[in-house]
Image (cartoon, rainbow, N blue to C red; front, top):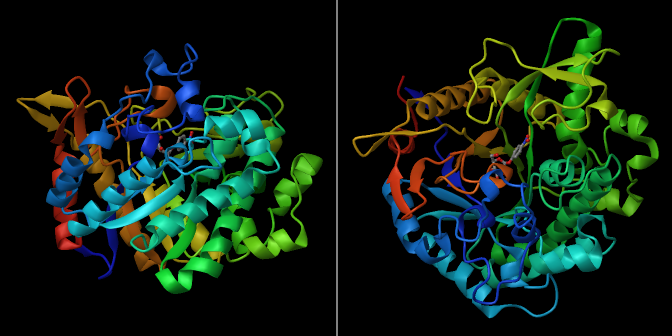
Length: 461
Ligand code: PNW
């Protein structure tokens, strides 16, 4: 039996656009994802989140299901355009009412709410009127929205996450154009990322100065990072792997834990990387109470050579021209249906890298999981690939704990199958199977296994 620390947080995660549906009712305004999905061929099968899992109407049943699975914590996001239909100005009371009910229902069932304020569904009005994450005023609009959430929910919510995966929002939304708002550029991602960081910093500052002492909660940011393993022992490849991690995670974590962007980014990007004022540096330094980490996979990294194919592999390398890093997969690695490699030791190495670089912060894995095409055999969801994934990644987490990494929680992505962004409903990440025709929920074998881990606070080996 591998035992975890006594107060370890065991949870599962979702996000608003991926599960709620109810996209245009009860006063909700449109988000950039509502409109992005209307553009033909942006989303696999032209799917959209209009209905999704219909969690908006089924949240009580879903919370009962969470309770029966034994979840101690549930991470979900608030849809900004449900609270502020145009991103600013008048508050939509129905939006406040909905999330209040969700929070109350969780607490009644003994489940701790972890709330993400921004999981990519920007109010469309802010994209039109303020240029989305490129605009000068966007971080202030976010801070204003965050304040409304603290005011209305902070009496009951004690764990806040400002921004989910600024890297994805900036790089896939403004660099590669595969996520909303679909822009393609090698300048805009760095400006969008800058404003996402400022948005986090301003919201955290408001929480700490006005709410924290009364409400007694904490606030952090969640960043995502894959592990980058040097392809060879050569110093060039070792440096390339380190640089790739700096361009991935250091981009967003260095300003918060060290006060500025990594040197490798500053020197390579020059004027394309905006600079922080001294005041902004001060605001960002130490602005996260925990290190939220979403981790999915690992790739090999090597120093680029002139005849390497240009561009990133599988869309998760960032802009390879800026980094001079060429990514590849080891042929031995098993792949999920996203073609993401299953490499548990990469998770352990990344946790150790974070502990070392950022002086052993408290780390919470706010997402980890995998997509597989489930087989339904006699009404049961045959799911041993996912079960194996969770088992091996949790074993890697346990090894990191033994190395001295201060890991305090783990959230499986995702609670249930849902709208997987550009992949639509084709890719299934859920512990719980959703039959999208009649919206029935059925726990998979991995969910049942995860329940036993939570119950034992450890893994039977
Ligand atoms: C995360 N990449 O997205 C998100 O937080 C979830 O909403 C999503 O469903 C989950 O992971 C699975 O995809 C990512 O290209 C999307 O590296 C893309 C990447 C990473 C994370």
